Image (tube, rainbow, N blue to C red; front, side):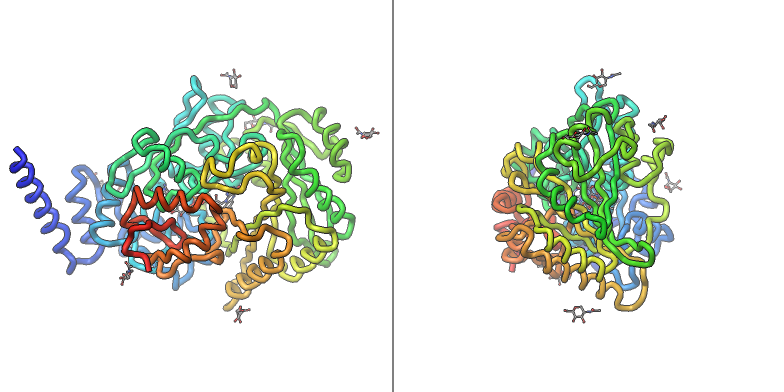
Length: 534
Ligand SMILES: Cc1cc2nc3c(=O)[nH]c(=O)nc-3n(C[C@H](O)[C@H](O)[C@H](O)COP(=O)(O)OP(=O)(O)OC[C@H]3O[C@@H](n4cnc5c(N)ncnc54)[C@H](O)[C@@H]3O)c2cc1C
Ligand SMILES: *[C@@H]1O[C@H](CO)[C@@H](O)[C@H](O)[C@H]1NC(C)=O
Ligand SMILES: *[C@@H]1O[C@H](CO)[C@@H](O)[C@H](O)[C@H]1NC(C)=O
Ligand SMILES: *[C@@H]1O[C@H](CO)[C@@H](O)[C@H](O)[C@H]1NC(C)=O
Ligand SMILES: *[C@@H]1O[C@H](CO)[C@@H](O)[C@H](O)[C@H]1NC(C)=O
Ligand SMILES: *[C@@H]1O[C@H](CO)[C@@H](O)[C@H](O)[C@H]1NC(C)=O
Ligand SMILES: *[C@@H]1O[C@H](CO)[C@@H](O)[C@H](O)[C@H]1NC(C)=O
């Protein structure tokens, strides 16, 4: 019996060897196709594997490139894009990428600020999960299984169709993908009440380096911990997540109050730092800083964009008591079901049919973006707020989102998930530098400004380490190049900023589940055993 099995094993290995590995003189796409045919009985290559000569290659590629910085003539191109139609295609992709020694780039929504889901500086294939996008709501236990390629818009829409009082705490932009957004943490305006997306995820399915499909039970608590905030792409391809839905009030109240630099905004922003992280959990007020032109003059305008889980009548006295400087009035506020308020946050007119949540961006706005993040632990003095604004005006294109922490965020231990930025933070700053000009050198010039601004912020933000939020991916906090060589000391640089003391546990999980470091990219978690280390 044992001999038979050994013989069978030998024969199979030989067949694989002959049909797969000896084809190196063929083009990479031929190798990939051969390998796919070998492993997958039923599959139609013409709508799953796109080689660069396929007329649909660039359509598929560009569909989820939202940042024009990575859509240039010199941007690296994949050997192929694979768009699985079912889970077995994901399993086959991993096996075939491994055999052919291609790096794998995993893409769900494609919003990665550094393009790590579709770019690499070594030969690579993209696995794009756009077809794996189902959303299934279970009203009995108030849970939802979502596939990695589902967008936040589709998730919000499908949940609300079943019951308007159920929601899920995650981001503002409808086209973010469940695969990347949740594995990096995921937060939005329900954060102070319910925490991050990962704090409300109760199961997941992942394809590991051996091509096996694992759920929470079979992957074990260590891996399940790691993929909720540690970034999925270091550990495998996430197929789906199980979300525990949260209950929201039938009506929520939203407002957007704007204050300009030259009309007392400094005092309001200063006070915001003291109160916004301490307000009742039901209140979330973001301070969005933009450079605007008023009467021909460039100034900073701060929009206090707020949400309250309750009625206008209950909100007004709460704000009047704790944050009178805001001067919030009844007619600044509107009430609506939570699902309609997602339009408000995304700057879509209220009253737009809810089906707009399902729209894929038809022609993703052609803008260039550089994103960064910081954590603030003590209030920034007034005079320094003003010098920060002065520099913003000089740069013209950089905006800042200040997102208050506190509430539920403070109750969760930093070790509970890989995301370590919990108690002790007043707020998270997201810097977004976005521009449209095409002139030569514009990219370098604007990115330089982002770096200068980040440097300027040093005295006001966290240090040792200077923390950063994984979902606001920033290659400047440390990155490996070429992306197939993981240097441990480089990994420690970005790892300590994104994960603080959780980094070592992430490395232990990685070493256990992917010792050879197959799943790697510029900012992946290293394995202690891999020969790909330098
Ligand atoms: C306009 C905009 C608004 C944003 N708003 C918010 C916000 O409100 N809150 C917030 O938290 N973040 C926000 N972000 C950041 C966003 O959460 C991250 O960019 C996130 O990584 C996007 O996920 P994605 O699936 O769209 O991206 P992708 O580019 O597809 O993936 C991002 C990363 O995850 C990996 N990955 C993707 N899918 C999988 C998978 N199935 N398995 C394993 N790994 C995978 C990729 O390889 C890559 O490393 C915003 C970003 C943008 C551009
Ligand atoms: C394969 O897919 C293509 C494109 O979707 C389609 O035109 C063709 O009919 C399919 N072939 C088979 C055998 O299903
Ligand atoms: C919707 O969900 C809320 C919150 O769980 C619940 O109280 C309500 O009964 C549900 N409504 C329907 C119609 O199922
Ligand atoms: C706000 O509070 C002050 C006292 O703290 C009170 O005099 C005033 O009437 C309140 N205004 C509103 C609109 O509630
Ligand atoms: C919320 O959206 C629904 C569906 O489009 C619409 O019927 C309703 O009028 C909207 N409510 C508000 C307050 O905009
Ligand atoms: C950007 O910064 C680098 C390094 O400081 C500098 O050499 C370069 O000239 C700058 N480029 C532009 C366009 O400002
Ligand atoms: C990285 O990829 C390059 C290009 O394919 C190759 O030459 C190099 O050996 C690879 N390095 C590692 C560590 O795998």
